[in-house]
Image (cartoon, rainbow, N blue to C red; front, side, top):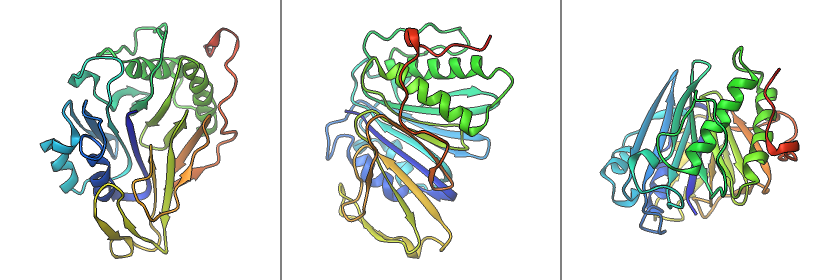
Length: 274
């Protein structure tokens, strides 16, 4: 399966340590060699790096690993192709604009018999089920909330419905962010850890590398790392139950209502507003 990595923080933070272990899974400690990508939110902008090559040997990945870009929301993906050729346009994460904000999306799984009707505002460039799902999500949100972004609670509720509707076609683990929050849906496998004072000395599972976060953070820093499988072998990672949508804000899970994905409405699609 593909590998997902997300970071949400209360202060801009670099992801160099976690990315070093994550990158190794793209052809070194795992067999995912069909491309990789990472997106950093910086203010209203988004800095995106994509490469259809294996991350373990990618010069672009080496640049990211050694370049301490600081962000409060980061989404990364290592691809094992199931639908779509190994090409740049099929490489996650994907980026679109809605309500004057950039949105970033990455998916792990395989959606079968999935051809959603799209209005034309958001269209796939590549040929993956993942990009179709992203366009479907934004298309539905734009129709449901035509006057601008809804409240976080209303947004979370709509995403829960979409997660179930789209997830009825197969495995649908995903990370989604608009730079304000990071949404994580677990269909089968996803976990997270929240790092805060007193910080641990963390050791990567995929590389013999350790870091004492007390030396590189302040006592008020808080960082949530969300990933397909744990990146470190000496921290208490929390498994997200399958069928759960979590929102992360300021470096920890945010209570926005029910987290269990809801039953799909009749017809399997969220209706648009009248």
